[in-house]
Image (cartoon, rainbow over all chains, first blue to last red; front, side, top):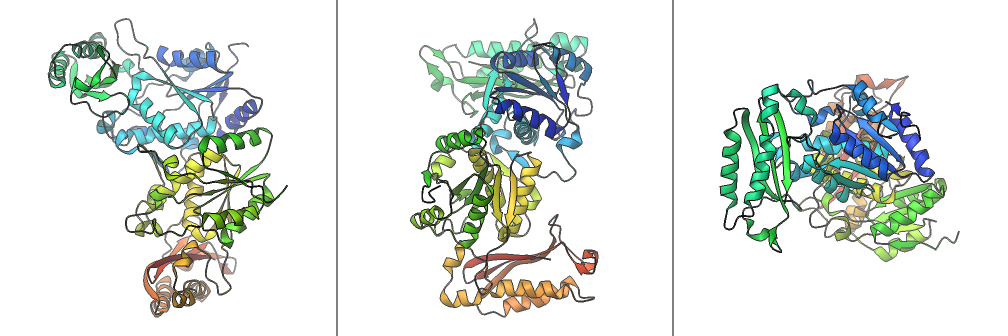
Length: 293
Length: 293
């Protein structure tokens, strides 16, 4: 297949019909939803889909309803030409790029929510964010009807919530999660890294470094979560570029329930099943990251 | 086809796989979701589906999450043997009868809402009811993946909300609505009619009679909605079996917006586009009905 032959489609009926025809002929469809401004995290998802599926569709849509007031919807980085060029090199066949009015008519009313799962961690600081994510992802799932959809582990809560929605609503799509892709200094790839000034960029790896240090501390005997958290917050707050810490949470990675004590997380001779997830502001840029032990 | 060959399936994977195989061979699938205790309203939907589709599936599931506290979930009439026998005579092929725990595991969290559309009319008196309806209908749609689903017009608001959800979430299913089926004296068929005592049953047609009278009054020149509503409420409240009127609403049948003035509803030389919908209690039984002009 000529890798450069990507089809750009803006219209729901067209992409739905094209993919339905391919599915009828037995093609396995892979799907990677994105908000564009692609980085190596995205391409790792697309490349995995290309490898595992017969046809891969990528969507580029900056979903307004997952941004709150005062958030960065208007300034969210956009570069469609560059995105198309990146996708054309992956082997993906379709790029679905709907207009906002195509996705949300004037009279749009429906909302999908995973209730309290969407109100903890990032959801506590971004009210309505995950309802917006669930709603757009369900729409995209219905438009594309893929067999498999790919999500990155950097957005662990998003991935968790989408898996829950798929399970609860009996959606017949397999969700696969892929490792976080990092810059050489450990910073998780994110379209929002573009916002960082030079000095902020240099300091941004403090987030992953702190998460790794916290993870290492959980192996110490008799250390409490309270103590690890206090050390971690100190590490972050001592960094001159860290403006604030939204949260630094220890959670059961299978339920997202908060972990109060490490005592229950020994499996064999090491701890496991623990998610440490955090969101901080570097200057005015909000960054998230996590490690799973 | 032998009309008695219905397949009773309780398990999600089995019905999904069987129908997916039929669809792959090009069969058009019709679906009628019900809560059982079937009456001629249901059979009219099933028969229409049998006529229009290659294979018809009927579900029987009393959906707990659409009942509020103090509502009639526990006492809702059930008669599975009779239901199966009724369905076997229609030509439908599948009856999907999941257990409650099959539909809602312990950790169920997702909810679908059409926001304010679910908070007016019946929704005002049954908080959360339509979120429960949307959630279960979306689950059933994903399990069965029909081409067409059939709903009755008696539950006009439900039908309207499901159409909106299907449109908003890009669900690839055609929703067809079918006329309300009535007893000879005009009472709309409903499983809840079974609750009525003999004297209540005799008085129950007052609901449809009042709706018809109200509809006829809209043709009078210069009459106001306020006046029609006042006469209608008097008619209802004068009936000894009417315990209360939840609502008696005039609404635009294409938006469900409340109509304050009849002035805008002349099309040609008669009014049109008006829904008059009401819910009343006959004794302790809640009945709904509507007319569309």
